[in-house]
Image (cartoon, rainbow, N blue to C red; front, top):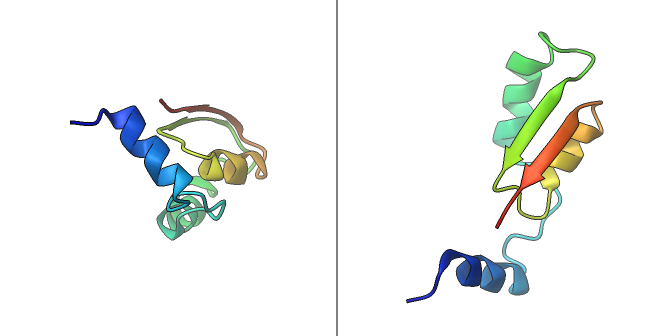
Length: 70
């Protein structure tokens, strides 16, 4: 049985999770719920951040982001 790190490394090698485009669910939720409350940005934690697509997107909107992944 493969461990999780090996499994995810394989997925990244195959480029199945290499997009830098944020998930539409994040974009929609951000625009509807977060941006009205925090228009100047804030602090975010991106858990299981992968290549950092969500952390990058949030940082471009003045958020200080820490991203974690195995």
